Length: 473
Ligand SMILES: C[S@@+](CC[C@H](N)C(=O)[O-])C[C@H]1O[C@@H](n2cnc3c(N)ncnc32)[C@H](O)[C@@H]1O
Ligand code: SF4
Ligand code: SF4
Image (cartoon, rainbow, N blue to C red; front, side):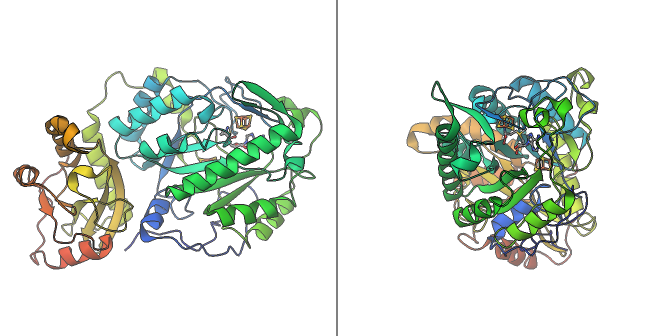
């Protein structure tokens, strides 16, 4: 009973889609670790959007470009489309809201920042929020959706903070097309118009996409289909992003109603017809796997794709006090393990195992050097990845080791519900402390593939698997 990987399926579920699909997408080869990441992201895998939920934190009001289709309104609770939010929140409020939603919706696997403006035009607010999420909700995936203008200079920090899913909106790779979509571009204190602004944006987007891919980040491309402007051109966009190494293309229909007050809406630019969207997705599907279950969510969307529970989680509705996040996290991991293995794990004595691994393919990291632990449920049902936990680095070298004790205590807290920890190496002292905490350190499988290592380890466990040692409150 393994998790659906979402590999080679063309990103086309049809369900919940605005428009059809039918694409015969070109296969994309993923490593197992990438496939695991995809499998738990509701936007990246059609199989995942029934199992996992997402939320957007509306912390980023400003934008550094003006798309002719965008008008960011703040006070519009009954409308659901990109850029719309009910309330703009601060990074601190965002963390509070994220904890409340993670507790209420255990299927929440991904938290993204997607506006209502551009996350990278609000660097302080965005990175403060991401830092808070990383340190206080270590088990959620972090996702950012950007126009790409500030990407090249932001990639290092995004990777450092553990963001491994980024969506870039790329509507054109030819400035003659792009200048019809963007009114202006603000960069380095200057405002650029026409082809000059368009070319600047394209250059930054393509450089940023390449850098993300070099660093192992999964990149999804959003393109807004604008009839008569970029419809046929999207074939070139699709081919370019395939060559760059993006893994999913999300062609979204333009929304352009006069009442939205956008340039296109007010000037009669028409929206695409359903069959036009289907045709373009089919044609682009020859280059790139297509996403067809995008719901064009609000910038503060909450819940499973296709549902919007944002109105249940406005700041004034959040509980005054919440349980410690560690308790929430442990409950979420057990529930996600049950979801992933369809309820079989508890009864069969499944083990929860944390693996120190750089990319999720090999058991290849020193325990103290892991920036994240990949969490697996291991049982007679197989090896199922059920999440990950981001961690402060315990020891980066002799100069930093005086902080080691505190960080180790944090690590123990992070992993206290695990049955075992796999890593490539581990010092004697942490070894003993892990054992005292009831967590088995395992180093015998250093440099072996994670799934094989875990399966072999399970095989050699005593045949009568013990029920799990610990439950959660
Ligand atoms: C609101 S934006 C926020 C992230 C970022 N500023 C960006 O543009 O990528 C999220 C997505 O919604 C799309 N979007 C915004 N307004 C739209 C509209 N009127 N019709 C279709 N897509 C739209 C954007 O192109 C982008 O892909
Ligand atoms: S980049 Fe995003 S937020 Fe900015 S104007 Fe375009 S759609 Fe709106
Ligand atoms: S707008 Fe599309 S890609 Fe973004 S969260 Fe919603 S479904 Fe996912």
